[in-house]
Image (cartoon, rainbow, N blue to C red):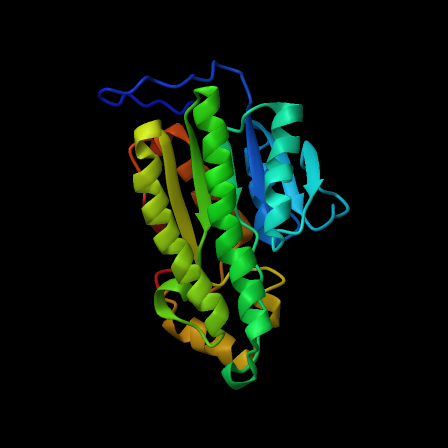
Length: 249
């Protein structure tokens, strides 16, 4: 996979040669989407998975356990990965925290945890990985998993607000990192088959299907395909964009 940039006045970063595998960091690999992304990247990348613990059957080339809500753990996480594998060429910020419940029962602690995992970790990991790319003189890509809830709201306000923040973070960091040949994009999935969608109430499921023109939920592989596109040379002139993958909502 090649990430090629020819920016006026900027030194061109290192280009991956044919057959060379770049290092990809994927967070949230235990979920349905994370697993699909790992499989989709296997042929082109050395995939380093990050989650609370390694799940049975994880297809990652290497794995790092990490609680992404712990800001102090993120720097050492990237240090360990770079020491073993070198500078990453790709970061997929896919991990997310979601806890359904009525707005009137929402606690400050849950809001803090949701934003720690869904927003702060995205910003900090993006910064840490970008610094490593720049120091190594390589170009690369960062893809964030947002959500349709971040565009249109959802009954789970902390999750919806955190994903709206991810869309904004994507746009802002894309502008900051473009001069270094680092692209930042996001996907905003609608409902797709996962442990999260399995917890959706029948009423909310019916509401989503009523407004989804394709009248079905997505498959993780369909979301992963959009992520892989944004990570590839086929999207080399795309940055700061959030692609909706939601059946036409």
